[in-house]
Length: 158
Image 1 (cartoon, rainbow, N blue to C red):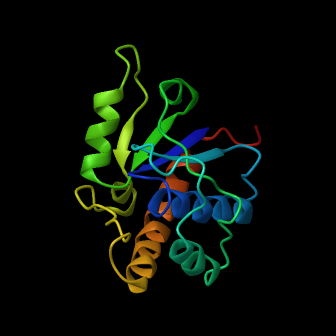
Image 2 (image 1 turned 30 degrees about the vertical axis):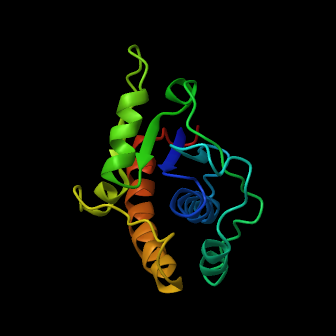
């Protein structure tokens, strides 16, 4: 199983989701079976580390984002991943606009995994530090739902 988290610039929400989800996979012993990555729609942060505020908020919860670097959504992502997880409606629309004609990989809003299919994970970039903690609360809730979905689809013991 291969999961790609997508946000606008890949320095706040999607790397936070990647880090949180990796921690959950580690806790469940699923790291060898589930590949996780993150990317952004835009290219302006490519190669940069996550926003320091995102790193600080994640670190307070035991999640290390320091090794992650931003990258942009690529055409081959539509072939390499089993699901593309968008942080908001604009990200989802951008994914669909970039989708190659032959691609059938599902793209979904992340909060749908938390039972809130129309809710977005808001971009905390232009707000204060508290926004990063609020985003992590949403990411943790949606990550638990995504993990349950993946566990239901994985073959036991494979």
